[in-house]
Image 1 (cartoon, rainbow, N blue to C red):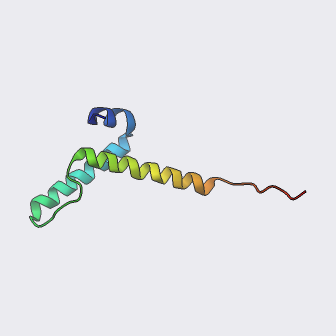
Image 2 (tube, rainbow, N blue to C red):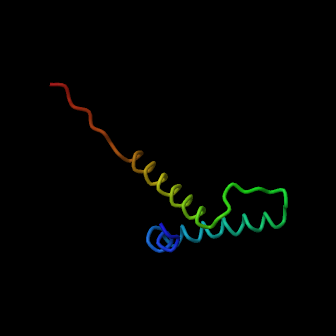
Image 3 (cartoon, rainbow, N blue to C red):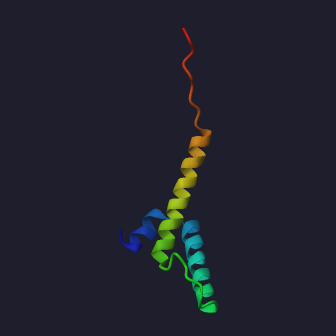
Length: 74
């Protein structure tokens, strides 16, 4: 999937801002500390990671709020 579609179709503005901010912070730290080796380097990877984390949070919230009814014994 192209990064343009990822950014325009799947991510909210808040997710884009978060991913962009984290990416810029990582770049700044790399410039200040030559020994720093980030696990994620590309902006696209930050977008994907933000989307995955948010999706996982939504599912966790869903499962916490879901209620399963037990059948009453006859």
